[in-house]
Length: 425
Image 1 (tube, rainbow, N blue to C red):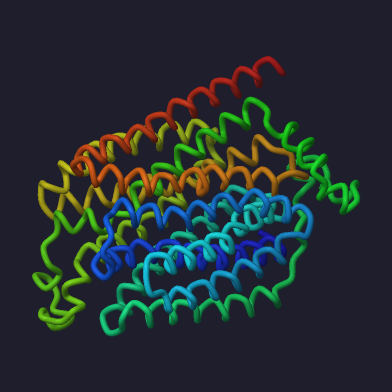
Image 2: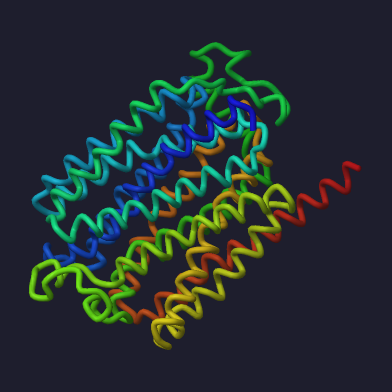
């Protein structure tokens, strides 16, 4: 990569890591909130879904604003909002204030993905590798968030832990304000020109322009890609939100392995080995992001999606039986879940880039994360409800429907793309 591309990759990567540091610290806190506040998994799942839903819903206006103001401004605003929301969360006194704090976090975080991915797709020449590195950084944050939260909880209460989680954001903001790069350096690689060069600001922001661009964007191929992204989001959120709590059912107390604190302390009642297994699963996702990104440079991204979705169906069905088989089989199936779950992300990001014009890339990724994290947030509520009314086995079997449908739609889009390509030649 040239200097401009490297600057963009580093800038987006550290910002991406912070977004997911906060996002995936929430499930660790959920396990504590279930103990501290008298609520069911269904109620808390619905509360968490509010923040996660706004994380996705805000992506669409975030994409529009990205095409209007550029990525840097949106990403810096995102970082500031996330840090402040976690400071507020530390003062929560009940479920309602938790819901409000998570809603603020969701709104702030929602602009990142359309801004960051648009920046990579328009500013970096080697897009597939950039998506891979960007995704790997996200998974470092995904693992870093729960790991640091878990370690902080060994000596601090959850309120102080959430306050300290806001500290790294200030460092990232300082870097974001000083790094320099050209946001549209690679537009010619993708073809076309940036829409902002040929339209006025008022035209770009007008409702008419939004409707016109959205109609042009939603070709059959893009619509199929959106459905694929939605299946990913529902499965991703449904699997991860209550996974630490589910793992508790199959794992012995952590004191059986490591004596980290007094077994009679309050921490011992709240903190279990599942937190570390969960972090390990998310860390394995780093390799999944790398493989998925590199794969998108070598084969059709839709073919890769069909394969990975199919693997996730098998993993979801086998998860509970493997977990009952003992610690070794639980660790193996958890590692496979982490690898394949995160291998999807660079593949669908590349698919969106293949089915959208450069000038509307922010808008296209806005719709992407509206589907993935907005509608996908319902996965947390679905999982919470399933755990309340059926067994863990039944919950995982039901969640396996989402990757099964994702694989089916990916195969459909792959065949459509091949048909169109053969006709054009």
